Length: 312
Image (cartoon, rainbow, N blue to C red):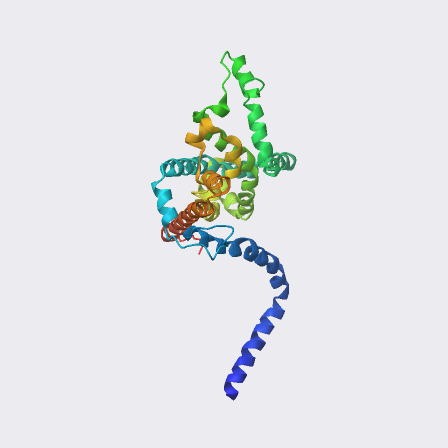
């Protein structure tokens, strides 16, 4: 018994010493921890309604259990493949065109030697990130207006007929991806600029002595040095493979572009909030999150096996 008490007090003293030693670090992590518990983990409790016939009058725990009924309904619905195709294609195009853009911008900015021009390029490219999605979509609509839009004025100057871009399904994905790149390319390049600042300058000096030009230095020194950062960012990006910002799509699409613009998030919004089918909307959202988790875990495992770089 005496040994047990000694052991207990010894552990408590050890924990107390660790806490006192790192108390400022614990205080710094306290607020993010509370944020994630309150806004990220506690709401997961509501996922229970995906498996029951939820009614706001009965509460979350008192609805009749229906198992996987709403999941099966979604898989068999006429919208399933359209939603999957649109969500998947928007994400694939975002990765193909949007993912390399901040890397290229970071390489260009890193290559600028004049401080004034470097700061100017960074500031101008960061600004769109701070513009709200509503304003961005409003600007896009104005630029592409068939009567007063700048793009159509340019087309008219070259003798082309005005195009009503916002109601034509074939233009929706291009507009969505291009506006997304414009808004986020500068902000996303920050992490790559940080990675570039850590590259040993001695490697460049040695390469110059060997006669390597700028392109060869980029290919053989810069890109391999920031490759771990690129892979980590790509793995994180894969975690949102079935997630497309519903807010922007809701602002941009209309019944004429539903065929290419309707994605899982907008469907969840329409069904869950618009039609008050809370259980069905929750089931669709849970399916989306599960697929995203499987994708990020799979890509992480492949990356770990191939390059020994991984999130965990």
